[in-house]
Length: 204
Ligand code: GAR
Image 1: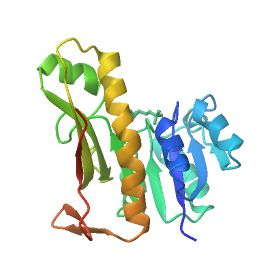
Image 2 (image 1 turned 135 degrees about the vertical axis):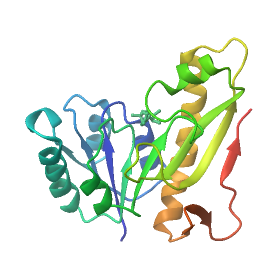
Image 3 (image 1 turned 30 degrees about the vertical axis):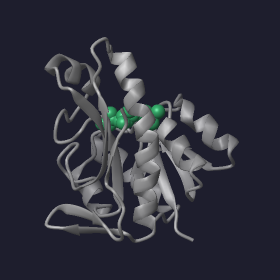
Image 4 (image 1 turned 180 degrees about the vertical axis):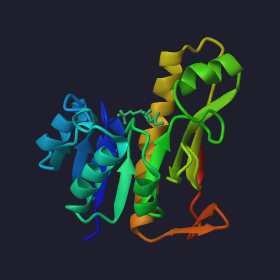
């Protein structure tokens, strides 16, 4: 049976969406002991682990500990779900092609932090979220699926974030399912899904 290890740092609502979608989640690992998502996972009988970055002197040492924890579950897929750590190149290369991330913007727009505030400040009329394969460059990598939402005249960061998050919960389980079913093909950095599956959503 194929399986997923999900890395979180906090709330874990994307992790929860994957569990509720019936995906085979083997374990949830957090770099923070106070990540709210850990309690949800444990309550569902899913293995949890805490690898606290503060316990490690270097990024390399932290990533090595993370590798040991992940590989103990022998996952087919590693899913970053609000995992707020910059990863070393060695770590990324180890899981290249089998590690996904969800990012709250229509990449390549707004990589990094504070995406909703930056989208509002830029005056974009569409915003959204992207699921992509993880590569060494932060918030880059072949895009699997994106969801767009309108930016409305009276939006603030909270309203816009909530509208985007609802779509994150739709596209991340979908992307993970495609991956586990062996339906994703990357050609020259472009991801295509076998069969006739739309790789974009618009949620007005
Ligand atoms: C989500 O909005 C996710 O897209 C974002 O953090 C949030 C985590 O929420 N990730 C990033 O910004 C990564 N660059 P969650 O813990 O409820 O899934």
